[in-house]
Length: 247
Image 1 (cartoon, rainbow, N blue to C red):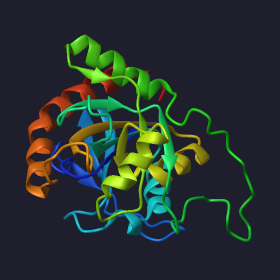
Image 2 (cartoon, one colour):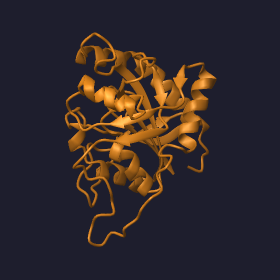
Image 3 (cartoon, rainbow, N blue to C red):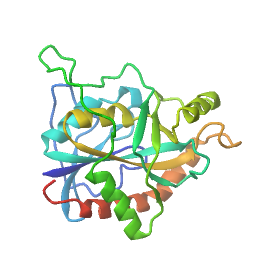
């Protein structure tokens, strides 16, 4: 069984492609063709969440097709890499966070497989969305490497593609969220419906709106992400190496 890696902003060039898979799904095409890669001596499939080249806004991503195609390719573990803004002032740009909770503020997205005329209605358990071997492996790998990683955090999933207002960020902070992004939902929920072990490794790219006096610069976001990618690659490889080969 293979491991799936879903990459967002800054993660398209993490791996050397070996081959691509041209597959369709009952939910339409995925964002991009999955690319077979090797990581820590293991077979894996990489999928570019926003397409390759990067072009699909977060509210238009076909999350159902993306998760379905990885499941079809035999993936039982999915590790997502996501760029986020830091709501908690202690999360400086470049910080890695293995989130353990999420609050979904998105709307209008195809967020379940249980909405077709022939699909069974299922109410999947979701109390701990990221609590599996994959997340634990990332945390243990970072510790082993001496790589600073925050081992918990609550992700606020917003609609995008615009960034949030300072007032919205204050609201998210009151709700207990520590980072903000646009893609963890419905991705995590769909993975749970498919019985996949889903972990999300976040890279803080910038302080969220109002956390810093400085305006948010898209160029600065890209610089922070590029600077963090080698560290992300190292944690991913060491984390995958710790996963049982039965996955």
